[in-house]
Amino acid sequence: MSSHLGTGAEPTPATPSGSEGNCTADGTSADPDSGGRLGSVFWTSLGISAVFVAWAVFFTGNLNKVTNTSLNWVTATFGWSYLVITLAILVFLVFLAFSPAGDIRLGKDSDRPEFSTLTWFAMILSAVMGIGLVSYGVAEPISHLATPPHGLAEPNTPAAAVRALQYSYFDWGLQAWAIFAVFGLAIAYSTHRKGRRTLVSQLFVPLLGDRVNGPIGKTIDVLAVFATLFGTTTSLGLGALQVNNGLGRLWGMPVNNVSQVLIIAAVTSVFTLSAVSGVSKGIKFLSQGSTLLAIALFVFMLIVGPAVFIANLYIESVGQWATDFFRMSLQGTAFGGLEWMQWWTYFMMAWWVSWGAFVGVFLARISRGRTIRGFIMGVLVVPSVVFFTWFTVFGGTAIHVDMFEGGDIAKQTAADINSAFFATLDHFPLAGLTSVIAIILVVMFFVSGADANTYVLSMMTSDGSLTPRRPVLILWGVLTGVTAVVLMLAGGLNALQNTVIVTSLPFLVIIAGLAVSFWKELNTDRKEKTGVTL
Image (cartoon, rainbow, N blue to C red; front, side, top):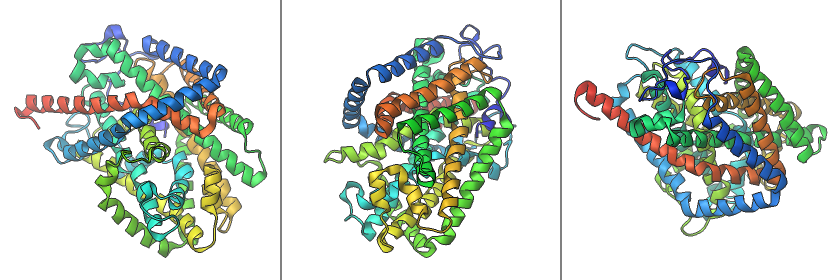
């Protein structure tokens, strides 16, 4: 995945990474540089990150208390905003796709896509199709089977099975990809068509003008750094838990903090070295290899699993999801259910928000020359269908095992959510081999995803430079690993989830703002060209 960030999809030469002193009023940099200027965004982000790490190390109890209190306040007071804003962005994108703006190209009018449509789809899926699919592909559906969302069904019943997949589709479907799509669209338009630097603050030029180069813009960029940092550390933590659980099942590795810290340290060393060396072929191999392994595991489960049951469950669950889509999209906690929403929907939405900048940059870099309509439809529809299918095959298989074969996957998942995927594989032939493949998959996604995130963090703190300095890459790679370790030691998965929800809220507001800014710029450009607005 990260190979496409550094090679093969470069923006126009007018998208350099200049310094503050060389910026024009619209945010375009006058002179490219080779490493980027380390200004206030870098030092502020580094300083606050260091304070956070010290807080987690020396005042762990206080950190947990503050994050728990903040989590309850944020979700109880503003939890609805995750639902409303993500739905509004989705509606905005659908409207945009079918409006006259849908014909606008992300780049010059003469530009055409660099990658074929099939290759482009494969690259999109590689951006996010990773640790989460192994972590939650079974865990979420089987958990919902045992504890149906919002009490909509009796546990362990056919109705609960349908609800389980319905809500899994919701958490991993259109809203998630709408966040990525609006970010990718805004960045692609800003860099490829307007020639601005690859910074989140530059997306607000239509609203803020030259003020994006001042304190307001720097604040936006710092918030983008922190959202990305904690989104990455959450993925690293989940990956370490998955690898540790798999190795424990296969070879008796102790499932404890020591093992998880060692796993994070080892993988951090690998992805930091990868980011510094710029070995694009190696990371490209990881991305392609992980995709092939995921397909192989998927086909294997489809063959050995209850294929007819899965097909029927898929159809019924998609129907239920489509029927209840708007109700699910706006179902809050007025009458309870806050804890469930914190553990599932609010956490998932916050996780997508925190990944917005990284995935947005990735999508922008591979989508130059595509029309706005083609971009939106491709990013929203294809990944959602793939995710739905993955969850149905693996989650539906686990549901069948528990409901009709006397399995206890839900029980094992309740005891340790990271055991769900491996517990399912244990019920089928070649369990040892498929478990090894699952572990390799997690590690490959682990490395390629963290490598790309390290690059994006370095780029955002180097004034948008496309070639951040090696010391900066090393620093953010190490800091990402250290942050993941201290959060794991502070409270494991709960600490990771709490932190990503709390830190993502300000960035959710920024995403809403950039959608407004993007709409304003599209209207202005169309009025200048045709004399009418959208």
